[in-house]
Length: 410
Image (cartoon, rainbow, N blue to C red; front, side, top):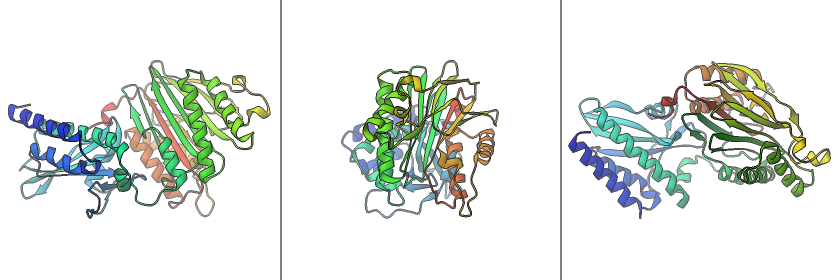
């Protein structure tokens, strides 16, 4: 980096770091503009992804009129988000419009739009400086989101149900990735989901994953799912193995509901060093194993009773059978709830596991990064039901030892 640019970059970072300590959360857009101007930009704007991942919405101070959202499919900003990749396009009048993905790790939060006076494409060093500036803005966005509702107001394009509010408050980030593993999940319908949930955690070499589907709908199902996820986390953090974890969740649900309500679940552990996947199926739809762009098998395992019902027959860890599968580098696991393959049109036709398998295999073979495959799968399910799901539909993709980590970042 040349001396002048290095000095400007240092000044831009100083502006952001110094101002960020006492910044009101809704001033993030103003701070982004101030930092970008130090690096020569004439304008800067943050765009956040909405809950359905179909549009990018401008982050502006409250009561400031907002421009129309940008479609994720069909706009330059959406292309930068989908990639994710930095895009540098001619804006006319001697200026460039630069779109930089807004990423927290590999979690796609939106994009930053910059207008930069320049007659030609930006030099690589300036592009890198803008990427680093935007990376810091992403960190500020995530950290300040705990102190305000403003970012939520921007992302929500319709009212959210109380049950959905509970579920989103329970979830980890939609996407997480390292050089060894990528995990990405989505819930639908975004504003009304109630009984579905997922969770994951990477502890050392072990990725813990779980998908839950609580019986019923709405607030009662959300309360049931919340108890199941909390009991799962409590057991996992206590260092229990899979069978004892399932037993603890089962016991917690039984103690609260006396066998009258239950949760189906798939609890798994992936050794990111060896690729060994171990899982328990508690009355849940089988996962799918994708390899080389094809669905090679269903991971049915040994199905057991749903969680919350095992005291009716046998209780304790012995009630849960652990199944195993050895993955190959690049393999993907597709875990789901029954609302995905049972999604139906108004005439009653199912989305179905065959259609699901074909879609997942086609998108996986396209070379797209896992988060984008997930987004497209969700949109396909919604289109099948003309946007109105009869049941919650949750999908979780896990990819081991991906060869394409460069697709996850610009």
